[in-house]
Length: 175
Image (cartoon, rainbow, N blue to C red; front, top):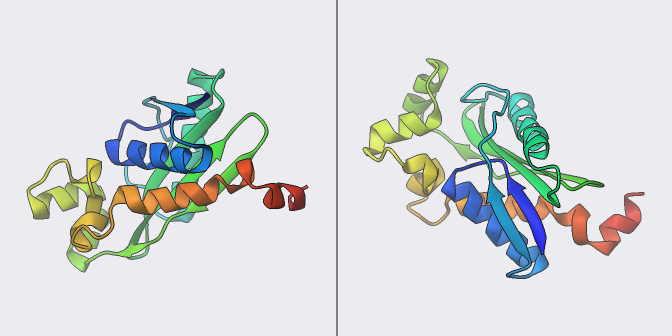
């Protein structure tokens, strides 16, 4: 059984991680442990570089906390121009996989709040009245009327980031 350390306590991210590992390695083959670590970036990362750095830093911190694990995962959501997205970083002792999830355009009023220094989650809470929106479906769930969610979009990106760990064709051509 693989010991997977998720560098997050967010239920939407944890669910995506568990689903992706179950899909990749089979249900029941992974035990996921959640750890709370610092990203080393702003509470609301701006731009792809800062967001990717946050995902990578979360992996570094998770590895320090649980060096005995088989996998470490960082998921960092950010804003670039007028869109929200996330970077995924997955490492094991020998390999790294990364992917960026789909992006969602945000309305101007929300972007104004972000430019004023507030997080997307707090802006979404303000307009929906749901203080847990970022731990649930997120802006993605609200704006797609539940057709997509943070979990579903992160799940897809996690599957892509896991490719280097299991796909023999990828592994054969990456050396």
